[in-house]
Image 1: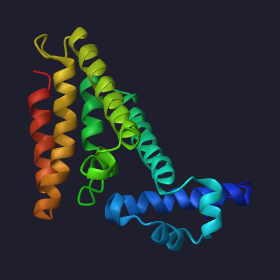
Image 2: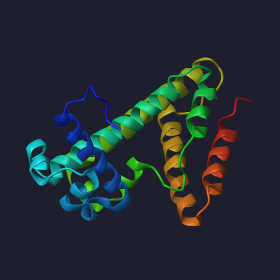
Image 3: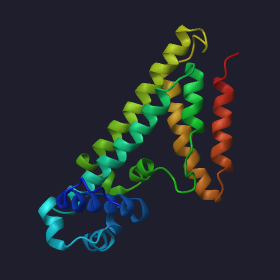
Image 4: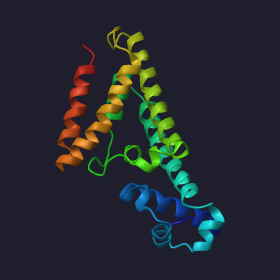
Length: 194
């Protein structure tokens, strides 16, 4: 439902972006045709080209929104209350639709997105930002004596992201979130303060 405060122009643009986001996740870039976007959004062809130059422009807006949403969620959890360990734990244990996969991770497996510097940039920037945030939290934990001084913040941050993204792949392959949960529990046991 679109708010009454939103103009018709904004709501049409928003519907087009949301429909493109859903289709990119479900079908990938190649499978996301302008016709499918128009059908899903209920927008007319003229309105699509009024708001966007074409499919690549609309896909970029959709990818940016997906990336911004993931980043905001991660920042909200990682910037929340608790010790450095508790914040990383909250990030790893946060509610996810594991079997559906990560909308940003899905984009990294799309050859058309990865082949385009412009489409790949928001994905890369988001993963970098989350990695930097986690690395900073690990360094904070080291200063507080919560994590071993030998831990490298950048390496642990890469491990956290690899565990989450790899966990999605294993869960989807097996049709069960068990593999995701096991990976998260394993990483947390390695990070747990001694």
